[in-house]
Image (cartoon, rainbow, N blue to C red):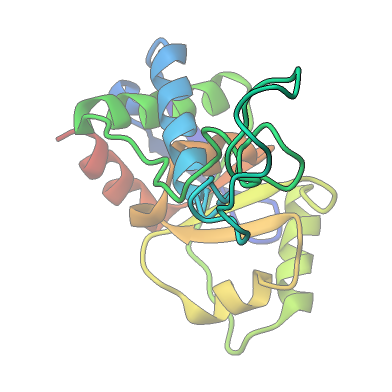
Amino acid sequence: MEVKVLDINGKETGRKVQLSDSVFAIEPNKHAVYLDVKQYLANQRQGTHKAKERAEVAGSTRKIKKQKGTGTARAGSAKSPVFKGGGTIFGPRPRSYSFKLNKALKRLARKSAFSIKAQESNLIVVEDFTFEAPSTKNFTNVLKALGLENKKSLFVLGDTNKNVYLSSRNLKGSSVVTNSELSTYAILNANNLVLLEGSLEGIEENLSK
């Protein structure tokens, strides 16, 4: 598929780039996308929650009443889960929520995410640019020129560009990543995907393995 290349002023450069159909024009696999996003979100969980069990609650282990003759159920320690202030039965423990996915499935999920953005016409290709120094104002001007000022956007760079990254950091609705840092979640979480020309080769190379 062919896509027009824009400059940072939002105007056409007169050039077009050929995007690989095997990456940007496949039939999206929604289940692969679901699994990859689920894994990403699971990996964000700290898993540090903890409830005290019977053996961990502070308190006496004295038998609180005689075994027979009370007319109620027998009871031992006040730390029993049936009493207020006692331990928690099967409470949460520190754990990792991460799980494994095959590389082929993750590649399929990213291809599907790219294809979804292309089908929705929410994918823009912009010629490579940089700033002489970090400037939020300059980055905001780029967003205005591309019509993305009030939209959540993701800019994908070919290589690390510190000035562009720092220029976007104060803007809540915009993110800047390199092609090697892309995730299915990041692609779908943005309303518009802005690919710099220098990122295209790396994206297609990473997803065609």
